[in-house]
Image (cartoon, rainbow, N blue to C red; front, side, top):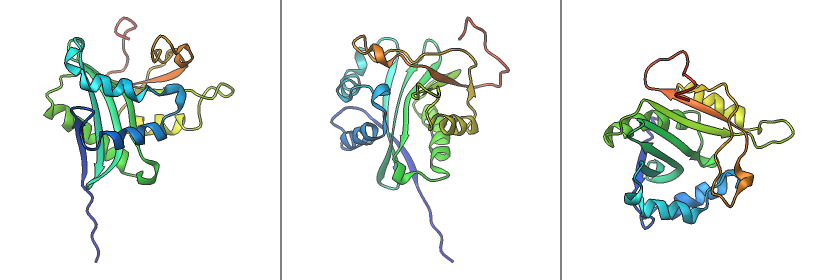
Length: 192
């Protein structure tokens, strides 16, 4: 009988000089649509200047299967609001398996505990990049996997915030997904 064991790890980069950070950015760059992509230099800047952020802490993490870097995660934790927002959650297509997204998603909860992040809500956006049909061909699949790990879709008109004032074309329609730490049937407009 043959047994295969996979080890899934999430590692937070502390600076743009971290060994695998450039490789993680290459995964991000290769797998992110230009209309929803933050400039890699800006990501490196905020990672290196995280201490200057007063509102929260910016995280960039590598996803590893064994010792191989296979993905990229970027999120911000806003402690005052008890809120975490995912900007990007990417697994290299050549390394995607049926269980990889779910395993990494579950490990994020452990990561939040280890980092002592207090939260009530986690959000993510799924951009609607197809202007003809309103939803990109990947959006329904991505929304489905987020739902399978506990997220719900906020039923409201939502536009992704601008990726900088010089990029008005990035304010595009998106689906907002929400994970509540406790079960909820709805959320007030004031909280939204």
